[in-house]
Amino acid sequence: MTAQSSSKDAIGDRLEAARKRTYELVGPLDDEQLNRVYSPILSPLAWDLGHIANFEELWLVQTIGEREPLHGDLGRFYDAIENPRKSRNELPILRDAELRSYLDEVRERALSVLGDAELDPDSADPLLRDGFVYEMLIAHEHQHNETMLQLLQMVDGYELPFSRRSTPPSGSGAIAIAGGEHEIGAPGLERGFAYDNECPRHTVELAPFEIDRSPVSNAAYAAYLAETGAEPPLYWERDGEGGWVDAAMGRREPLDPEQPATHVSWHEADGFARWAGKRLPSEQEWEAAARVAGPDGDNLLGLPGAGQAWEWTASDFLAYPGFEAFPYEEYSQVFFGDTYKVLRGGSWATHREDLRPSFRNWDLPERRQIFSGFRCARDAR
Ligand SMILES: [Fe+2]
Image (cartoon, rainbow, N blue to C red; front, side, top):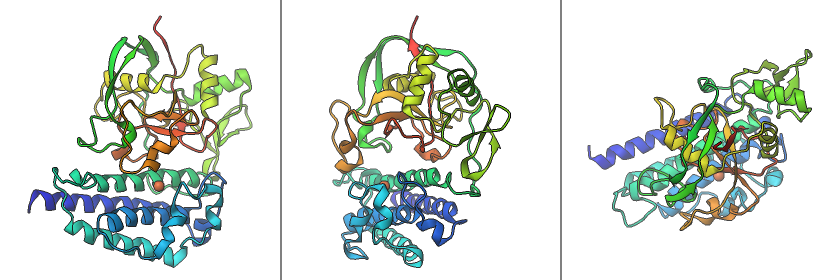
């Protein structure tokens, strides 16, 4: 077996594993639930499923394989920029049996194109170099799985098909990070997969700072609510005895006091940090701390306690100096500006393969449906 055919086998296996997870997530739901609108800020699951297949068809079948699409210009209904989430259920998207056969037919064609593709590290086509486009597709399906999990929090009685990742308690106190030059960003598109917005790697000058060893816990957030009367996170409900329970998926389960508070908005995170006499870290500080703290054992993110909830940072989502959009402007470039805030790390719903210190997530500062928590920082004293 040549190196290339074994790496094609590995890609095929990972595409299959991603699809298996997608199907496991929707397995317990019926067609009515797949088509239902649970929230104006989240797509019906049928749209996500069709979009996953359509994105695969666009990149792996049409672009790489130069083949015609299966359903003409159906793709325009799955364009995430053209179709705001609140109107996605009114579109003539594929549903039920037709949707399932579309997913399967696209996959069959994508694997046939993969069989003929040249994934040479020196390929003239940057999409194929080191299998970039396949990495992008696998990551895309993983990321939609996380969005689908956001919606699944709203489905009464939903049972997760896998156990939630939890992070070991990371202790109290803060990590001191020296001031000076710090390297930020992914090593480059050519070395391991990264999105365009993580590149190019560059140096930033940071003043010395301290960052908390742990994200803000459920217990700490409850103490803040008790003192300030601030709004509780999404899915928190009163337990009848002055405490709180987690009411996601229509349940009422105890909140683990040590795990990170999740489903808080940027404004709420910022409010807590000020109340605590601290501030949110900038995304550069977060990444510098992750690199200095270094991956310990199983922790792919470097920062202790990271990986259970995304962590809001103080930063707007901006282009790095020398940014070049690749492979398409709509992935990140159209979101740059002061509208969105950056989140770092990853959550229990993020696929393990997508955890890396350079990954930049972003959302509107008022959003709480994402698995968002935060940790605090402060200038060195
Ligand atoms: Fe997408």
